Image 1 (spheres, one colour):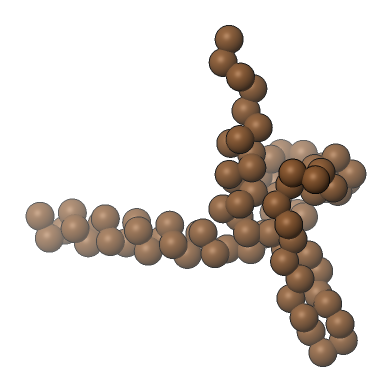
Image 2: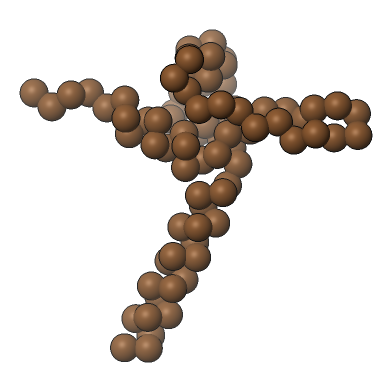
Length: 83
């Protein structure tokens, strides 16, 4: 029983870490299995796509990143309707 509880706890910790994981364009492209250019020209520019996060640096703003959980949720919302 203790082993099972530890496994559940580890899974919950992994899910929490994944929820705050940030993806760049290449990560999204790998996940969706589209080219980087397709992601840039057809996906992240959509008004309904999650807003990007920009991490400030000493020289300005860094590259755009997206929360992985938000991207995955957006993908799940855009499934084809059941027939």
